[in-house]
Length: 79
Image (cartoon, rainbow, N blue to C red; front, side, top):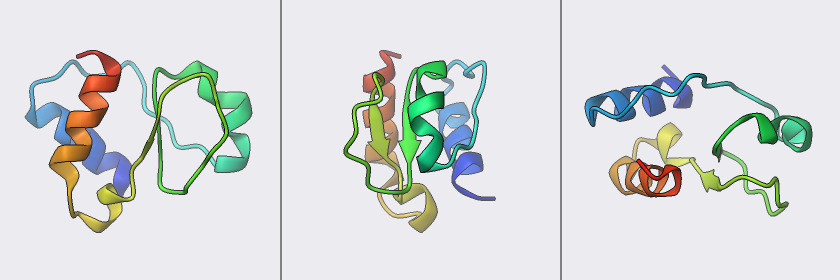
């Protein structure tokens, strides 16, 4: 699967609590939707402040450097 599937799998492999929801969102719609989530993982570079932590998640597409990225996600979520 795509990036979303890889994120879910990485979290499950670490035995981390399964978030209540994951959701894809176009970058253009982040301003309206980001507040509904605890964290945004984007595969596009964004510089705007959406009021929640933003992680650049291209690694989930390339498959390179996923572990350090998951470490960063876990840290930002306080898990």
